[in-house]
Image 1 (cartoon, rainbow, N blue to C red):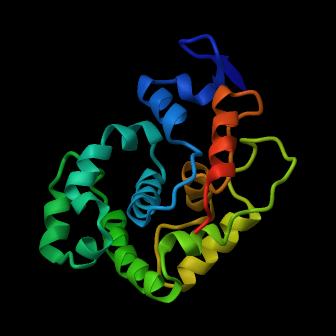
Image 2: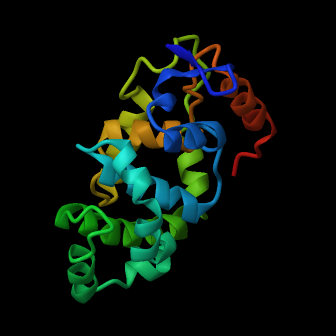
Image 3: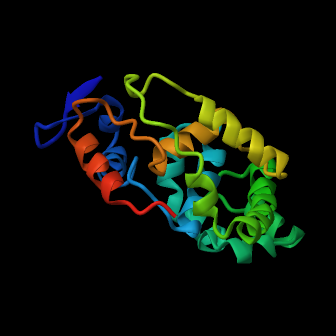
Length: 198
């Protein structure tokens, strides 16, 4: 579904619900990412979003960055119980013990994965799906998100179900899920062509 944006060019309908969505849609969603810190941030924020609206997470993103040491994997892996208590008292983030402890656990698991695979990016980009002719934005999971979710869980990660992982794949550019005639779809496609897979 398409809707004209403020510049009258067609965009994915969801992005016009709020100004924050528009900026996120136009500059970030679907553009390929190879930076481990940013990938870790994205996977954590998608985990926090589970059961909530993305608008809530986007509005609190700077607070999340501040609370979680800018999503530096090595720093978060060293968080202790006192950090969990600090985070549970932080009204600027989503105060959910399970999701908070998942981020800390996943940081330690990410360190292990980086040691084995060279980088988080190299591991994740191995799960890039083949180009398909299916229409965008019709799935909430895919065979690749199910496989990636299963493998992460096997490695001890948590809050990485197939739906969360598919949203992560959309966000970090493993798939281009912009609507067919969305003005940003072609920009994402161009970025994906130039992108050097890790």
